[in-house]
Amino acid sequence: MTVLALSWRRVVFEIRTTLRDRNAVIFSMLFPLFLLVLFGSVFGHQEIANTRVTIAAYLVPGLVASGLLYSAFQLLAISATQERRDGTLTRFYLSPMPRSVYFVGKLGLSVFVYIVQIALLIAAARALFAVRLPSGGGWWTLTWVSVLGLASSALLGLAMSTGAKTVNSASAITVPVVLFFQFTSGVYFVYTDLPQWMQRLAAIFPLKWLAQALRSVFLPARFGHFEAAGTFELARCAQILGLWVLIAVVLAGRTFRWRPASQ
Image (cartoon, rainbow, N blue to C red; front, side, top):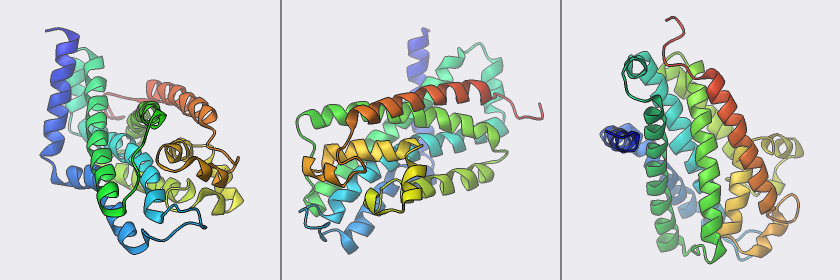
């Protein structure tokens, strides 16, 4: 079989295995939708500072950005840790299978989970809260932001998995990290309303730039005045996210291990 055919089979295997895991389906695919319905039902129709942008509309781009972390960083950090502990990675390493097939399978899984997430999220936002859909160049922006976000998040998740000894420790590390950056990156609160130290800290990491770029997709152009620079800064978002992809490549390449540290 060709590497392409093997990679496709691995992607299908990863997706089927994940769909059999009820917890993975709930927390990886449905969690952003749950948050939108929860917060949207309570605060959704309230308007932000006379902008004619509701809180529900503001939540959508942040939750899409968070979905990238759920479907790539968090999911892969936990699953790769489990596979390292139970010997799956060791068997894969010792098999004649090209190692690239494993990474393609994980990336394909992340893409699948992310697409399901945003499809459900956008459909619910439109049906329940009348949130506008992207138009024109918004779809292109959504595409390149998703590609850069998935690439960096997946690689960082694989790098993170090496530092965790067990699945519980992987969860204990990744879940608080994701929550912290959600609250400091403008996912739940208007970014410029946050304390300056939070803004400076969040600006170092990808989620802030993912959420900012996605706000340009789902919110009116006039909302750019609420960003730190008074604009959505799409070119800068692309530069910083691209830089994080390179950082993630280096980190994953230097830290990822096929066997537990004791072996």
